[in-house]
Amino acid sequence: MPRLVLALLLAACGTAALAEEAAETKPLRKVVWTALPTAEVMEKAYPEAAFQQGVGGKVVLACKVLDDGRLDACTTRSETPADQGFGFAAHSLVQAFRMRATTEDGLPTAGGLVRIPIEFSPPPVDAAPEGFVDSRGKRVMRPRWLRKPSGAAVARAFPKKAMGRGVNGGAVLSCVIIDTGHVDKCKVVQETPPGFGFGKASIELSQFFVMQTDTADGVSTVGATVIIPLSFTTTGGD
Image (cartoon, rainbow, N blue to C red):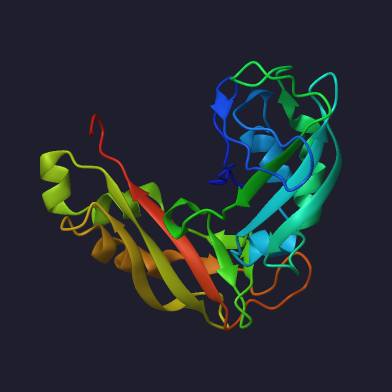
């Protein structure tokens, strides 16, 4: 699974994070986290179906703080959307949290309650790996390419303006897969930096892509939309 852009709405490990006030007795404020879930841990917890569809979510947990700074007896206070498994994913992260024994103000945290907002965000299109989207809009990763543009083809398509200035760039294409496995009706959905012709060059390279017309699970890819990121790098470029 590719690296994701995941936002945990807390301060970085070892710094103070503001815990929202809980309605119960002894709410905690300005707690200091000594350990938080890593990006890798959150990535593994991300609900697979939601990730494949590019769906993000947010969960707010309310937890009791133990004597050693771990969390216990967590409940879900809110989950949006409610049907994608983000609540379960958030609870699976609880063991990765640790809190200092006192708040920023020197108050003990043991026995207190803390609210933790956790946000799961899918990668933006330009950061996502190649994949195809079926007629229901589901993103499927790891398409089985039979052919891609060669290095020589990419070199020939490299925009002259960018090459002359030593500028690196790229583009993301959205194309439809036809019954031969080739891609058709390609359009540029992202171009970086703009104005150097990387989008046009990527369209030219689309003729070299050929995909197997079914997935490893036997699902037909014909008629689906494929997301293809391309990059152009000059030797010694920026």
